[in-house]
Amino acid sequence: MSSYDSGASLGANLRQFRRDGTTAADYSQVAVSQYYREPTPFEVFERAAVLKPEAAAIWQQQIAKITPEQVDRIFEAIPDDRGSPEAIRFAKETILYNRDRIVNLQLERSPSIDFDKTMRSNEEPSKQSKVIAESPKTINHKQNRGGR
Image (tube, rainbow, N blue to C red; front, side):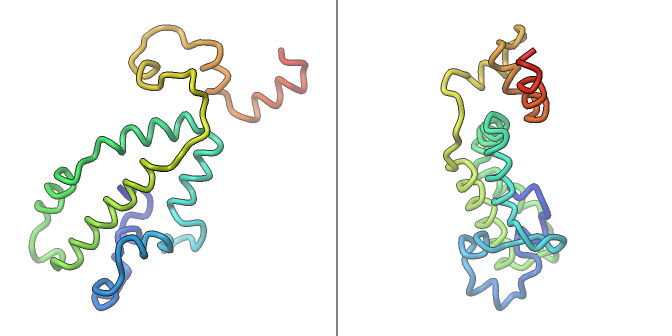
């Protein structure tokens, strides 16, 4: 789930004794990248979702398809000497916790757009879809020129 700085996001920088007492939920609330102190990866997603809620909704739909069984299969492929059972458990819990946080984030978006249909359709996007796809800079530029 952590598609940012995966090592830090999965608790790789926690010492074993801290993993034993820290829940995935607690860690995910404060986890930051080793390269950047703030914002957290989830805060980045929240901020991006405000700017592009339709794109965030597509990410949510894709992430919602990830099942706990799929996550288990990925971690079952890790050789025993590459991670302790506690580290693997913690990483799986962190992935699923963050998956749920992203999937359950309420987005402000236009209810008139069917995102699944838009993704499957080969038709010309509607005028509304074209406006949504434009960057804020483009929209502001058009507004300054009288909407042309």
